[in-house]
Image (cartoon, rainbow, N blue to C red; front, side, top):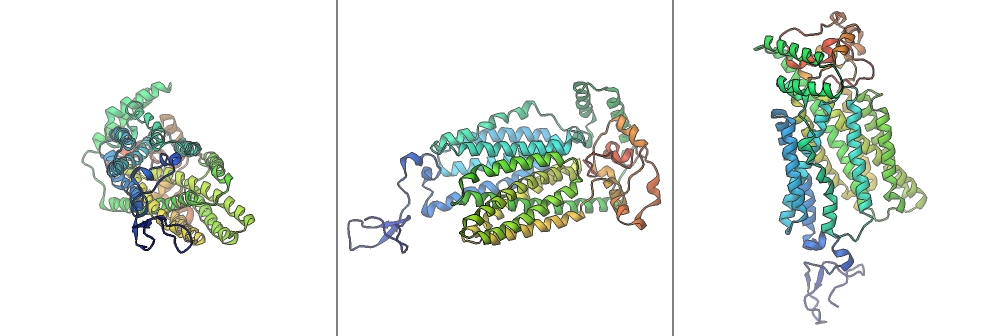
Length: 528
């Protein structure tokens, strides 16, 4: 008697009669709270602050703030990691994560909860990026793609499994659910003790004493001889002393800036597009009310198989070709999914086909997202890697916000249009990869463009690799592979182990400085 009936015959969810006992008074007013099922009320944040009806917008605001707040954190952390070092940023973000997660669990007001989530979002994203950068700068060329892919995929797989298991306990209170979800954060303090500063950042920043200590300790731990390391660093120091005051020509600096800008624009767009696809697929799955029972664990198994395939092929293919093919496959699957959605309608046989295509699309999207992270880290020089990777992830967050907005098309029955839009965005990024360098011969290509290799790297091959590389023929640039007329007769000259003075510190530590070609199986992108 107190709740009016809507035109569709169902009781209203957000209005009540002003005078329930008066049958002649049909005036309605908005309600600001509900009566909840006692068994389920404690398992959600909605009853905590009555986020219903007119207050439902507060829930969307909390989600939007969580997504957008990381943008400023990412840019600031990227700049600080390039300017002051990777390790201080890791320690600072680790401390913020610990404090903010505890604040989320014990928040008593909506405002306090939103503010705590702002710091959780920004610090966790910054921590992920900087730790990944340290990993990339602390391993060899050959193992970098595999280690980065494994770390990203393992984290994603564990998180998916963790939340899938957590969903099997629907009656767990919201407070306990928060505590369980932040339990893995207890591992974060390991960043204070187990993570060391990036040796390549130390060399790029000319902190050779600290770099020598790290490299000698690493050589001792790995059972390697320490004399070659000390000799290499001594020669680096001698060359730095000889090039004091040397500056690059304006042409070289202009070409270097042009190449970096072009790569940045392409990878920012790539991160934007893949995150649109990832969040759209994720939110579409979460909001589905007619999903089959197998859809709860099916995507998890498909993702695990896709992750296994990526680890198998990541070091066997050129990375530019690999990411291009991943994006093309993802765009094609989105097109197929759009067609399958139209064909399915309400027919169960076609619905099964569309669900299978959806699961495969989601798995490929997860792989593309992780490999995009690997590619971005490998594409930029050490001196600007922190800012570049952070900005790429910031654009990815923007893509996630756009994906959350366009997912509303699915609520209005336009699923096919949603996936067509996603495929168009992904295809455009796949086409832009044409302007990125191939994996082999990239150093020579940069030299042809007037960009010195010294500006793009701070890597250090072993002395044995340097000696072997002197016997190897110089490689050809991507330009020379395209057009015989563009080949330079000077390319046939071998390169000396130590470059002439006037080049910056990174040149000493580049494979292309010692020889023209990297050995097969090594993951050179032109700069580490």
